[in-house]
Amino acid sequence: MCSRKILTALFLCSCLEIGHAAVTVGTCQSVKHPYTTISAAIAAAPAGGVVDVCPGTYAEQLEIDKPLTIQGIVLPNQPGVTIVTPTTGLNMLPANSNFYPQVFVNNAGGPVKLMNMSVSGSNALINYLGNLGGVTNDYCPDGIVQDFSGVYFLNTPGALDHMNVSGQFGSILAPGDEGPQLIPNCGNGVEFNGSEKAVVTNSVVSGVGHYGIYASGDLTADHNVVSGGNGPYGVGIQAVTGTITDNTITGTLFVQTKGIEGGQLVRGNIVQSSLYGIVGAGAARHNTLLNNAIGMSQVTDASDNLITAPSTYRNPACVNANCPYSPDLNPTPPTIGIDLGCADGSLVRDNGIVGVGIGIANVEKGQTFSPTNLFANVTTTSTSCTQ
Image (tube, rainbow, N blue to C red; front, side):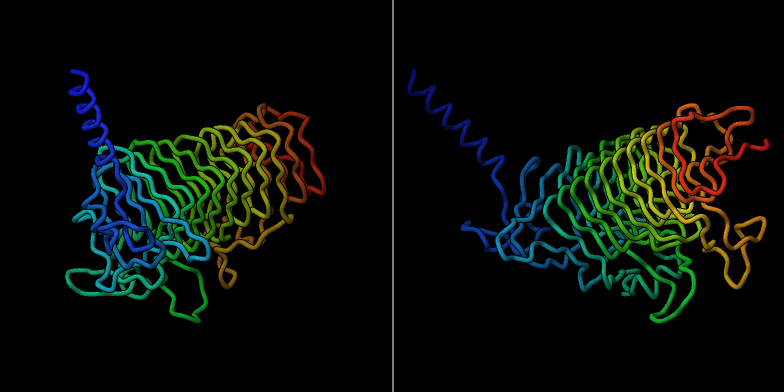
């Protein structure tokens, strides 16, 4: 009886080991049957399994439809894992969507984690009805591509850690041309669509056209570096709910760019060079906002933030003295530390506001804000809402 129990236990342990064994891509480890592509390894891996990827460049479009961990193997003096677009072009995923993601996580039925890899969209090609075209010069300007993204999660909880996502940007301008970039939504770094939990940590997102990191539900974004927002409506990090902490975000001062939009708690971030630094956060704490035209907007609970900028800024919508977004046709309007938008300012306290044109703008009529805010070299301390 004892020997039968021991054999049964050994059999169960063996099954568990097989079920959770890692699948390897490449020849950097001593495994009997490594795969040559990440796609093949994803197909072979069991749900809940791990795909280990050796350093190298992989020209693939990945589709993940089961819970997995896909992680690059980090080796000394090796360049790491980079996923680039295939020479056959990116296919539309999902069908009839006009979306072209490089890594598509589709209703996986459980969490998917991506670690220690780069996703580069530079010089991407699109396969549209059997015809190859470049994202930059062809299909983005024509509106054929509505969403070219590095990593796209659909109805799947996911996590990214130590990822580098870059180059998801379509331009309407030829090399050397001057003028404003007019494509608002062709090129996103990391997207989570659906109500599932999203986590992005210790990652870098750069050179994107619209969103750096976007979540339609709850997002935890921590210790990331986001730059880009090259289109006229670029956003560094946007989430409906969640915590956005200790990130560094650099935007592009053009029309409606935003550093951070949304989130229940936005804390400890450095946000610089956007039109709006932080917009619509539930609470903003201990952030540093540098050279944004408007440090905060639609944030009525703000404390211990440092906001600094020159007293005026060049309205980027003004071209040849034409200012369609400025009612007074002023190409150099004043910068604003915190724009309350006619809301109560009682929870705006202990902030340091330096150098801006208006410290706290559009305070609710008949109301005031906490005297604990400190102002230095500010042209106008506050303005009241006229409504």
